[in-house]
Image 1 (cartoon, helix red, strand yellow):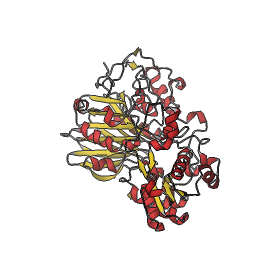
Image 2: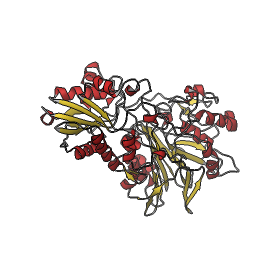
Image 3: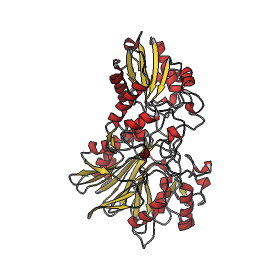
Image 4: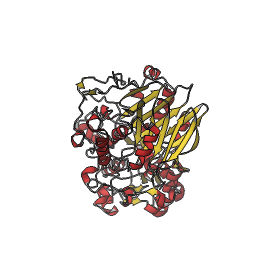
Length: 532
């Protein structure tokens, strides 16, 4: 546990813990294949008299799809901040005993996929750091694009005396933000945030706390979603409206782009730290967000169904059945079937326990490939002409294996339809796509991709059709991964972008200066952040 009183020199734990397999399988079993990895999930609650740790646990449970590498919760009782985090799924990291130790009336939580910084225990969130008046704990969804500038600012302000997660070996842009929030005795945490946030570039939806206040902030472009909800006795902020539903909070509004919200005993305060220039991520509508979430007033499920309808109009097919690639392709497949008049059917069965695995598969297992995740219903697809609807194609290996599997199961024809345009550019705002060189659509036409995956035909929805399905103005959506048009300026030097930008060897701050101590985080995070 971490106490509010933080010594000048914090210990650093070495990373000798072994990642525990969760017994769940993924397309990583296919050689060279990795789909788009989700953005992180953040959750915060201010609710005196409620079990805030348990509310946060269930909020994170609803956001598990946004990140499956690590999870953590920080709480405050008004006097101290406690942090509990570890590698693994939300249900693996926390148990009843752990949650009962996290007492207080304010809490934040985080479910992580590592889009910046390695997937290690040191980089799990919430991050923790000292302020002039106490402690700050912070969770971040998104990626910053001017991290190197912010690192230089840390050195300028704090020099070799830098503390917090950076001093303990964290290599995330979140740790850099946490260090900058340290401030000075003349400024409150809120005042420090109002000074720092206008200098931050990139995508960020933040939840953070000190001993008395819950804060939420969203970048001026509003790339990643963030919403405010109301409990009977408190307030909630979360990445998606679905998390509000799970904890029984009513939706109030979205956190505005460029807005800082503070919630404490005096109520809810709002300040605008930068002018709003909304350009929300269109891929949230395509894949990232839960279908039962609403973004900018548009139901994600309704948007995906409409994408399927438009896809049917743009790329019709002569077929007997429309089948989805579950689960992400299901709403679009429903829309395609409704628009085309072709019957909808479940032709693929998905393993319900699909996630990440740390188990290295044998070559024999690799040859099974996609069957570990999806298996055909032979009696449904045998001798049928199929339209198979999926959300995206990244490298193409998954679709190639799927088409092969369907043909072996007796499909007469396989027509692949994709409810997003070709992915041709990487994302630097919180989604971990393959590199541009690895994206199949950067070097091949749709016709060539069709031949490569051995489909009878291939059709992608148009960029215009996808955007119109969201009911959002095109000017207020980021379509960079499809169009190459980046709404937030990127640094000219390629080495200043990517997952390893903040690795300690590259920091002007130098390596962590605090003495190392050996602490092995145990199962369920039993050793997490035991500061003296």
